Amino acid sequence: MESLIILLPLALVMIALAMAVLLWAVDDGQFDDLDGPAHTVLFDEPAGTRPDRQDENLKNDNV
Image (cartoon, one colour):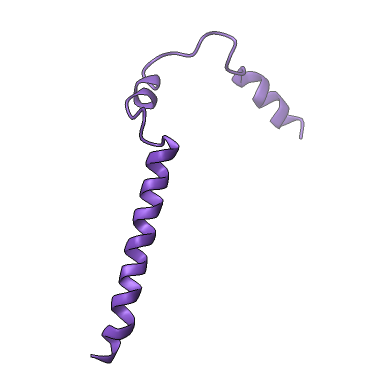
């Protein structure tokens, strides 16, 4: 029973902290666009935005 004196307030503080973090994330916009990043994986990048892999391999060989 003596441990409940410590564990109950500790649990309440942890719940309050978790709720504060959740509310901060919602207010900060973390959950605004859940589908956008998932759909960007399906589309190709435009040419010229991605470095050429052969150039990277040549740089690594010279080291």
